[in-house]
Length: 227
Image (cartoon, rainbow, N blue to C red):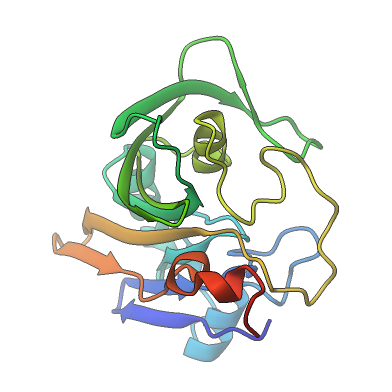
């Protein structure tokens, strides 16, 4: 994995890392050594480090880790009780007919062994505030504020609005697997901000990712017109 894993905050209780695209948060399936957790344990000399939540392998941005195993539950409870303000950024097609901002509510299910999640009838379990930050040349930069944390929630909701996120291999349709080492077209989704009150120290935290989405910062390169 030829991309750096940046540490944006470290104290005696937590570590906040700015994860690159394609790097798994924790060991899963074929991704064991090349994970954010394994890297941080080794690089920071913290063998007891654990993840308080998980960010999809294809999504870049901020992930919270806990230093002390006995405190992990307190930080996980923040996410369970929706006391963490999470802000994401995505690049997707711009549709002038799409009325934004809006709050999307639906019921999402993810079946074991099936790659893509899907929306079904029933009581909503996924809620996302969708805003358009700006647009140019047929693309939009979207601000996404999830109230819940269902698997692939943001990807499913933008796809349902008719503006699937660029670089998504599952929505609107499942494409063939990308060859190992092909990092040219990462999913254009970024966990931009994390804000919460520390359950152990009482401090108010607000962290921001330093990463950018290439389809927006350098669209010609993303489109393959430049090396």
